[in-house]
Length: 360
Image 1 (cartoon, rainbow, N blue to C red):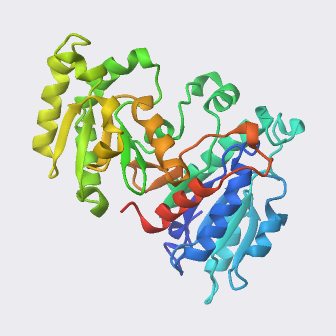
Image 2: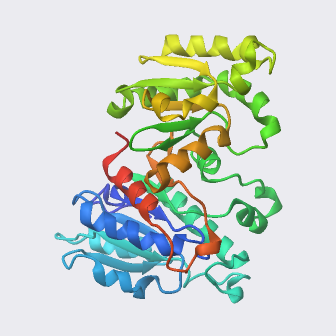
Image 3: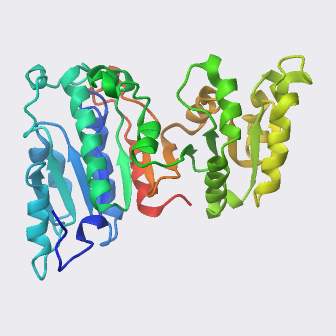
């Protein structure tokens, strides 16, 4: 189906949301992100939510939306036709689209139902369905940004057919789906971190890191980050791989054999001051941390643990290198507190804020 001739780019205007795992905290926090959007949006930022809970169209939070907001309640079977009908009208306008994927879904696991805090094949498949449908929409029509709510890598992998197994998270999936060379930027208000390797066993980090440092796409993404005003305000730091930066080879050879040289080569390519490789254990002390806007880490937990500990609910997971900006809260499904009323929605609100404003 082609977009309306009267509004040829009507479908491409949306900020798109995939709803995550409905058995996790995604169901608790997603309404907060939509309400945040409703208070801070511009008229040129309509929102398309691919929801996957039974009560999407009858949720109490809908009553908190501004009265003048034009809301379309539809489902996956009728989305395009409903939007085309609106787009064909001279005064046609839609601000928020709530697209129900749960109702039309008649797959083998629907009988299991959804229960907060109790993931199963049904909740996993609905999370996958929301992500896939969002990506199908973006592939067909484009978007102005994507927000992804948390899902479980393990549960997703469990329900995928063998030919699609190996799902390692949003970042890798989106890179493959949109054939992009990407990196994970954990964006915070005062400092940010970028793990050069992401979701893999720690024992593979050194080998993977060396491969990543030889990829010109990484430099291209770092140069893109350099163009963002916030990231030009302070220096950047590069973590060493080994404790104490290897102690001149005593605690590991990677620094002396190639990481120091790569740091020097990268320094010559970036229009910003880069220091390191530095021992990671001292970088996150307050006196050191305030010197740097971005810290490049060699592996996931090296920088994600201190980032989440220090930034808390202010952190946002951003994917750099896609044809559009993708943001996500910096936490997972948290099944243990789902549906308890104890869930903090701060991170997904920040993710929506970054989606609205762009990474600055």
